[in-house]
Image 1 (cartoon, rainbow, N blue to C red):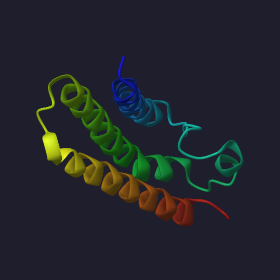
Image 2 (cartoon, one colour; image 1 turned 45 degrees about the horizontal axis):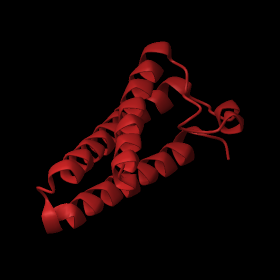
Image 3 (cartoon, rainbow, N blue to C red; image 1 turned 90 degrees about the horizontal axis):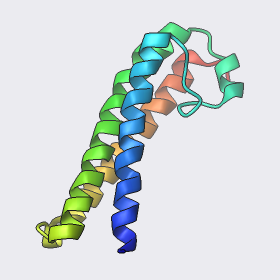
Image 4 (cartoon, one colour; image 1 turned 180 degrees about the horizontal axis):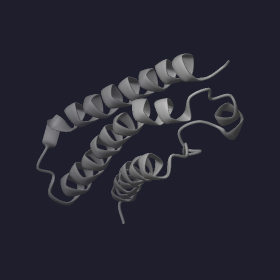
Length: 113
């Protein structure tokens, strides 16, 4: 079994988990521990505002991650992307940086740090 195939499957599952956890966070009104640590949750001055700010960003990021994982699996099996795998990496890194910046903004706006 190819190691990258397993890695891409883990990326796909992680992306799906991120989408599901963001939707559960919106539905339940509780911040997911995957987004911020328990200690930080206690410092949140506006939980509803934090969730409204971050849940859709987490869902978009999770969707992009899942799509990258799926494309990686298909590429490992068929090699249809060829040299365009670099574009896949750039999209993944760009979405990661965007989501991390969103988390930083949410921390500054909603947490007493």
